[in-house]
Length: 267
Image (cartoon, rainbow, N blue to C red; front, top):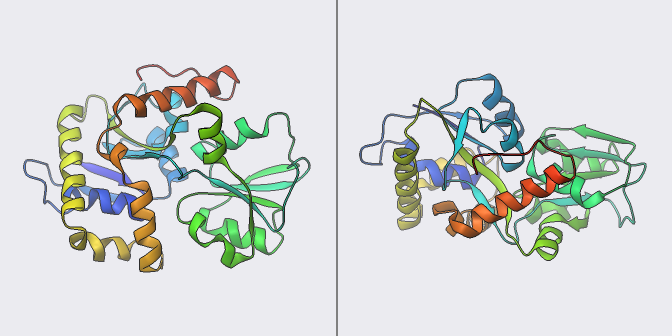
């Protein structure tokens, strides 16, 4: 069975046991690592068994994949940030770098900005966004994950915390990354059990996955890795539950009503 996830600490922590044959009854897993903007595309073009994608990409994928109720990233206080070198009143006429055009971060930004009209929106590899804003290549940049812990090092300021905006507007947690199983190729119920067991084992002894997590953490310091895992691997990673599914429907229904994504089914 193949598994496509990001190299971010929340994914490697969550899937360590499954990737290393430590989950009883689970098949051998071949792992591919790619940033989520890449996995959003790979899920369309390749035959992936289990894959991490943005919740914003679901409307284009649910005909081929089933959303699993575990393994992903959804929570509170963990949303994307729009950064700039100084405070901004508007992004009208600005050059804005984003990590992907089907990422949840970009979808939240489009909902937030309303009728604002940036001069350009450019999809940029995640690691290049903060340096690009700091050196003036872009006027603003949309960042995710560990960037919320380190952006002051680049001399940047937060224009808006889109997670806070979303939560205050809707009262819902923020749906960031989803785990999908390919229809007809993977038993979704069995995969759900394997992933939940992998999460339980990661929580039971975090030291077992530490070397693996750090090997893929793109030179993050241990304290940043620990903050990242604590924030993004939470109760929703183990089970979306009614609140998690409600957040996903809330995001996608609101985006569909605004004409930003197709209507999603099977949620």
